[in-house]
Length: 319
Image (tube, rainbow, N blue to C red; front, side, top):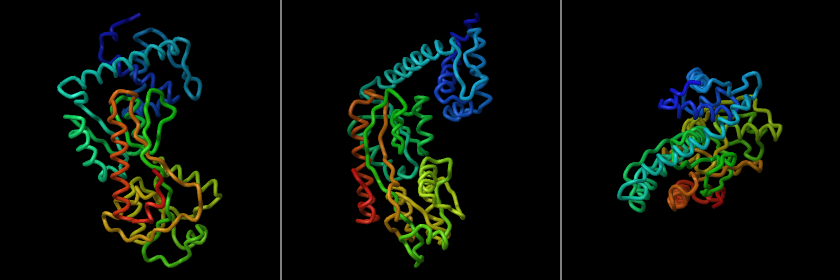
C-alpha cells in the first residue's frame, strides 16, 4: 500500500470529498457542496482509493454507498477533518483577542441590511480583527458549513440534519401577497389573480422557490404562466413594473422598498406559507458571539421592516 498521500496536502481535500460523497450519496452533489467540478471530485476520490489500495465506494448503487473499507475510512476521515477544523479554529483565535478571525455567510436578501451592524458588533464588542462576509442562498450555506469555510451562517435553513451545530432563532415570517401598485383586481383569490397576472417567484434552484412550488402543489393550484429569478430584488422589480405578482416575506421585501419600488402588499389569501431565519454556528467555538449576532440581526431587521412597511410587515413577523 502506498502511503505517499499521507504527507501530501491533498489528503485533507480527498477526505473532504469522500465524506461529502458519503453524506450526500452523489458525486455531483458533493462536488457542488465543495465548490469544485464533478471530474475534480472524482479524481480526489480515485486518488484516495489508490493511495490506500482499496475500494471505498460502491459505484453500482444509487445513492452511492460505502464498502466495508469505506465505512472504516468514513469514521476515521470525519474524526481527522474535525481535528483539522479544531486546529484551524484554535490557530485563528490566537492573539490579543479571543476571536481574531470571523467568517460569516448570510442570506443575500438581508445582506445589505445587516452587514454594517454585524461588522460593528464583531469589532466593537468582541475585538474581531479580520472579518469575511459572503452573501448567498441557503444552499450555499450548507457547503460553507460542511467545508468549514464559514464560522457562522444566517440562513433560512437550520440544518437539523448536521451534528455539532448550535442554533439561535432570529425570527419567523409569513409570506405576503405582493401585487403591482396599479393592480385593481380581486386580492382574495389566487385563482382569480392568476387569470390576470403571471406568478413571479424564486427559481427552483433556491430554497424559497422550492418551498413556494411545494405549497402550490399542496393547494393543487395550477400556475399556467411563470417568471423565475434567484434574487428578491429581481422578483420585486418584475412586480413593480407590472409584469406579474409574487409571494414574499417582509425581509425579502426590504431591498425593494429601499429602492422605492411601487408595490401593493396584502395578506396572502392562503395560510401555512412561512419561513424562519436562524443563526447557525459550530457548537461552543465562538462563545456568546452567535447569540449576540442573532439578537443584532433580529433588531436590525425588525427596525428596517417597521421603517419601510409599518404594521403591514410587522404583522407577518414573529420573534
